[in-house]
Structures are given as structure tokens and as C-alpha cells.
Length: 104
Image 1 (cartoon, rainbow, N blue to C red):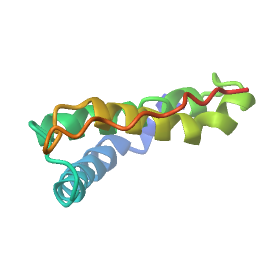
Image 2 (cartoon, one colour):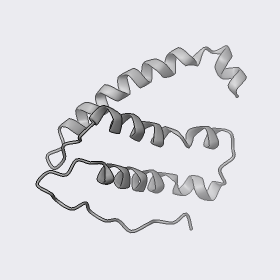
Image 3 (cartoon, rainbow, N blue to C red):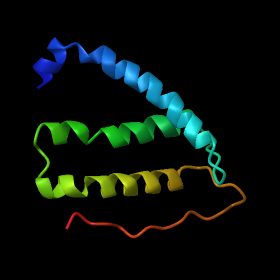
Image 4 (tube, rainbow, N blue to C red):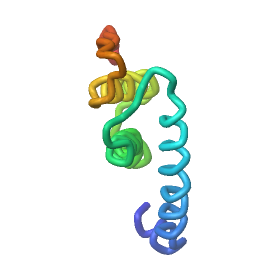
């Protein structure tokens, strides 16, 4: 798979997509009415990389199908937990809490 990616020179494509995704995500988070992030570029960088991280395992077939079916819910939970844990609260509003969803 990586040989095919190298042959197709996807590095530039991935870089361009990342360059578009980061500013768009920063702009989206800047519009949140209930949040103001202390270090928005860092929060965005970590969050996007956490979301993209499982992709190689999925493409390489290392993730069991049971996990793949649960991936969307798990990534939503990861996002909610990370963004709520990031230092941003306005008016000392406590973070919301979420039930942990399992793969089962």
C-alpha cells in the first residue's frame, strides 16, 4: 500500500489537504458560541491528528470489523472528550460529561 502511495506521489496531496483542513477547522472552532480555546492552533493540530490516526490501521486491515463499525462513535467520543478537556471554558462553565460507548 505504501509503495502505491509513494508511486502516486500522494505526499503533496496529503500536505495540501492538511493545509486546507487546519485553517477551516480553526475558523469553525472560532465561531463556537460557548467556547474560546486558549491555544487554538495547537488544539486543532492535536485534534485533527487524533482523528486521522486510525486511518492506516483501517486501510491495512489491522482493525477488526467490529471495531470499524464502532469507529465513528469512538471518534465522536474522542473529539468531545478532547475538546471539552482543552482549556477554554468561558464563564467557568463546567465541561459536559459523556457516557463511554463501547465497541460491543
